[in-house]
Image 1 (cartoon, rainbow, N blue to C red):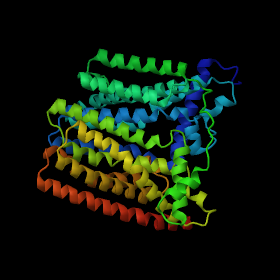
Image 2: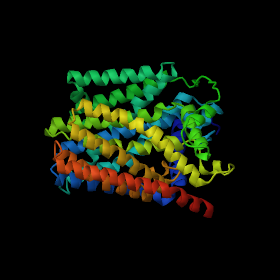
Image 3: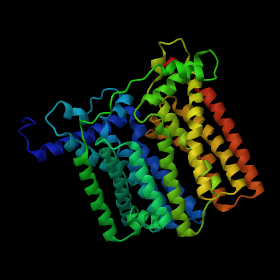
Image 4: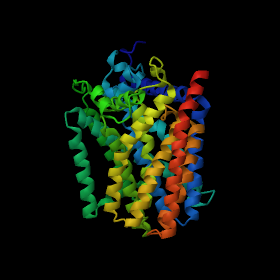
Amino acid sequence: MSTASRSPRSTTWRLFALLLREEWRLHTQLFGGWRFVLFPVVIAALTVGATVALLETGTADGTIVTGLHVLALGFGLYSGTAGFAGSDMLENVFGRLSLVLSTATTLPLSRRRLLGIFLVKDALFYAVAFVLPMALANAVLVGEAAAAPVAIGTLWLSLSLSFAAGMALTVAMIAVRTRGVPTWAIAGTIVVVAGGSWLTGTARDGWTLFVPIEGSLGGALGLAAGTVLVGVASLALYDPTYGRPSRTAGDRFARLSDSLPLGADNRSALVSKTLLDLARSSGGVAKPFVSAAILFALVAALVGVVDSITGIAPAPGIFFGGVLGLTAFTTYNWLTQFDSLEAYLTYPVSIEDVFRAKRIAFVLVGAPTVAVPYLAAVIWFEATVLDAVVGALLLAGYALYYYGLTVYIAGFDPNEFLFDAVRFTMFTVGVGVALVPTLVAGFVVVPPSGTVALVLGVAGVGFGVVGVVLSSRAGPRWERRFRTE
């Protein structure tokens, strides 16, 4: 039976099954079969372990549940971009794709319909593979074996709804963008709405909409209906023919290379190439700032919710200094998405030179990326001078440490270990060694005493040194592995 002779319902289910199968194939081939299969197990272990640890420190059940919803919503906001793999942003990363999603360009299939099926598939796939392991935390919270299955199922539905809402919001923003609305206008609207809700005191009520398990059944049904409505409206609004206007540019490579104070060797040219690759990609140099802004907004919202529930607010400098250092991962990811080690084999440079250039580019891009949201945090939350100074040391040191950890474990493929159970576990343990004690200190001693400030300051410097050592050894390590493979 030909595709044209099948009923629309039959075609829809067939495409849905093909997309699910392709999602599985893509993940298992990219990230190594059993390593990907074990990834949900790692998520479950981390979630249950973190829940037990938080309960032991006196954290309220509601705070833990809210934190899980923050993670689910943030993951949904990120996952919403995956459905638009035909955009030039992902084409810059992967080149011309031959996925099922791209068949609308060669077969008589509606692009909007195919995208709709893809987004539903994504919501189901990630809800089972990643959100369900997170819901196991409720088994610890209820503490009764008989009630655990119902509690896990309820939290899973709630988290899945928050995840889907995040996806719908991202799809809506992309759809509006395809109708010619500039990015600055979209970002400005988000800032105005968020700031207005914060100033008027409605932020707390607005946030509870994304935590269905703590609200009423009517509220959860309303969020579900709103998510579906936004998703359908976004697909109707989305312009599948949209493409970014062509751009022309002068010889910025030479000007940038000459302006960098790096000496007359390969480093200047390699750093220039990295920065220009970032600048010429979709979104340009704004992407690292947007990633940092999203992390800042999510963490700031969580701090406000925790404060309103428990009456405990962390030391803002220490708390945000430790957490915002995690932007090192996203910044390095943007700096490496557009090239590979193989691409440098045609040049008279060593792999160690390439890694060294990436480290310099990371510092040049990463420093302003984390400085802006950190300054906003310490001013907004009225940090003391001592707290702000210690937080700045933590931010600089931990950012270097997270960067060194990332490049040492993942090399040029930081996204790879997001779904690799072994590498992700190594990265998580490395981050936890530095971050968990810092967050505990940030919540327990407010404002920080002189002794706590001294210990944390030394820790920031120490971890920064470890990060520099790891990043300096990453080049030789990956060169040896690359040559032997």
